[in-house]
Image 1 (cartoon, rainbow, N blue to C red):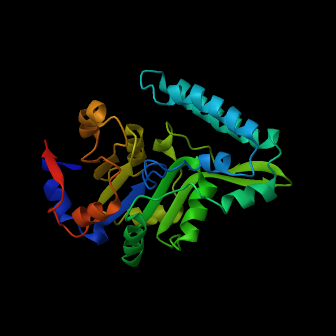
Image 2 (image 1 turned 180 degrees about the vertical axis):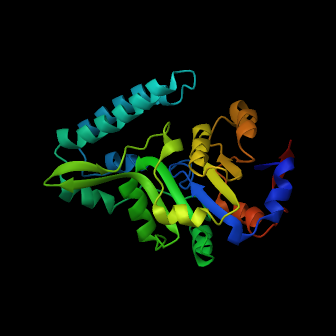
Image 3 (image 1 turned 30 degrees about the vertical axis):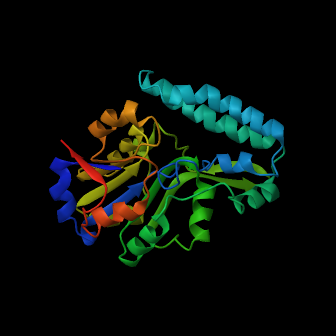
Length: 274
């Protein structure tokens, strides 16, 4: 089901591709609700020992509760999310995951699944040269490799994520750590900064309410926010309607989203809200 804010309907219908800039979260936004996360690609690999998975699960069980608790002080959450990322990287050292093993894992991605219709959607956007940024707290190496495998890492696509690079078998993160709570102040590539100055509206895609913070990187640009509610619909639907102009449930794919946003076809399974 797709829920559309009635007040935003005219904005949707008036959209022109040459006026649009798009930005996406990656995990559970571009990928399906049942897909592993980009960080999860590592622990799902047969090259990884079971003890790594156990330690990674312990980190998740501890830090995830902090990540989703909106009542916790933001500065504290930011610090803890950075700490989570560093501890996750330290597991690679602990279990001797060198550059050779890491690169082999990056070429697997057996448990990574894109949402239905996403690849053709991105391909069509690339043909129209619509600028696309992917701002992710995930493992950027996975994001880049997944796009490359599908021939979608085009000139119009910009990945801003946690890219790990081995130098003399020491792991470095290229640029600042990006986590789910600090996406509002990432550094955009200069080319994207240039492109955004000529655009009139931002289409923002995310699966968590905190993903809306991504829009702060595109100051003074009106946005249309599209949210994927991946579970507990009865509990969270009304909350998502407050923050997102379009809410997609039931692991909705991009085929219908493309019909709404690009083809202006509203004859789909939808419901309006104010």
